[in-house]
Image (cartoon, rainbow, N blue to C red; front, side):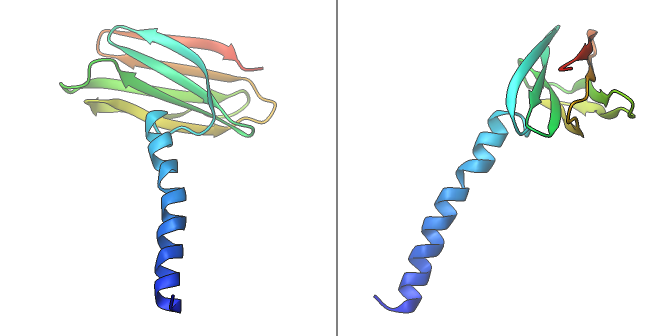
Length: 122
């Protein structure tokens, strides 16, 4: 096997290893970490994920299709909220904040309602 063929085989093998990461992240709505809380909304849900250093939230439509107003925000205690809002068909977010040993306040809404978590993950 020549160096060119070996290099191409190595590139394909390494590419195959990293190709699953975006797919796994897409299933989580783009958030790293583990799902720790789900906040129900009419026709949607806010999913909260926590990794070692971050909290991430995404507002996911249960029946994607038509555009509707959706928003999601995460605020670390003592910090400012980070959010995403607009007319979306599938999801708003993800929004991520650093949250090492900090509580967070998560909010989400769709056209038909809103939800707030209160201070969680303390």
